Length: 598
Image (cartoon, rainbow, N blue to C red):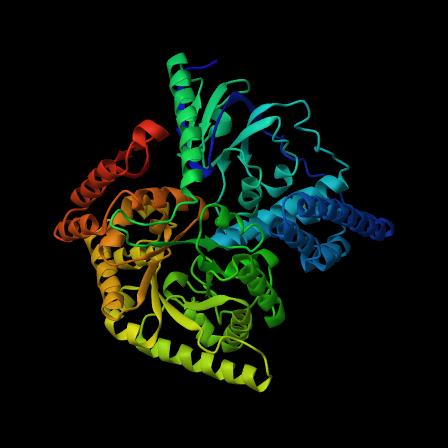
């Protein structure tokens, strides 16, 4: 047992766990290299084919188990891995290189994989990097099949908290949550397939804990806190006792929030606020109703495309949207058109005319939709058709001018006309909303609101574009400050433009789910907030303990402050004053130095 150490990472699954560490550091896979005689080449290709087929059988078994135990969303991830085994790299390139270079299959795959990963390393796009990890995972599994290696029992007899280098999908399938109480990983991404699968385990998971496999040894005692991303290594007796109290308070806090889920989101002075959920995939979306969601404030339609790893035709899109609408019945479902480009690209489709050096300022979102109108029109028709089954609204991302809005409306009317000619039902009066996430849209909000039915503020991009900060770049992460006075004033301008036009202005970015900002949003006139479903009870709890006049007074004071530090302090002081018992009930309290629990 070493000295007490605190490591930090990113908590992606909430919860607290206490147990001994099991550090899994697999030996580096040795790649055999030998040249083939001419008469052995076809046998080698046959060996490759058999290895791929065996892996596909395993993947189909994994897919079947996920369908039975979890749902189709997670199973679709395995389907994307099955498709990787059918990629021309494995079915054409590798056999061709075996014949040409007369080398064994493992050697050829590893050489090809190295080149593929080198190409991915030069691209900042998150989806490309995750796609590279999936290809690497499948390549390693094929090589293990070729070498007749079976590591499926590496967790047999093991219990505790698993400490690993990196989350990969093939590892997630082997975890028995009755024995493994939590996961700590050195690397990971919130958008990766492995992370999506890890969330289904419902045990605390923390990623991006630097040097975890070197700083943690087997049988070290750990406390991991997925709520804040802390890993306590060999904590003192006092720390263990204190954390047990925090765990008890956390469980009590979660039970209280569950009770709040059934209560209406109404301020103390009886002003109704609508709390809705951000949804990425349809399977499992009904959990949002459990948390008290009053609809879908943002359905990110690009996620099904990314999971399926292909462009989805109109009828298939229609079925996805219709299924979601039926889950929420008469509740509003706001469907955002494709928001691709920037940090979300589709490497399998030549959508862009050329590779962009700065995709965040390039042909992304509505710009790409207007450039590739066949894709956009197909999606619009699918959304319109789904509107016949419930309260569907259309949301357009990254609008920067009135001209773009007018062009979008023209296309929608043309597609409505086309559906009428085909006698296909849809809501003739479907509402059209605009995402305000570019400063030009916020500054033009008085003009834009005249041409749409509602606004939805995307705070993630609004902060990024206002402050010229790439939110995915760790080197400038400290500059990504939502409390910047310029950001708050743009939100105020946008909300007021909607209020003055007697129209709705919602917020659907990450800030909507952070109670620290709730009174500011309410004070500027925002009455709809859309967030991750599990954040709804906490935000609702805060709403029920403040009134609008207090929030308006807070906004009046905030907009006069020039310093971020003063703005943060005022928000935190207001939070600690009006969120009753936050530290005593949850074990966490707000700090003016951070907008997270500490």
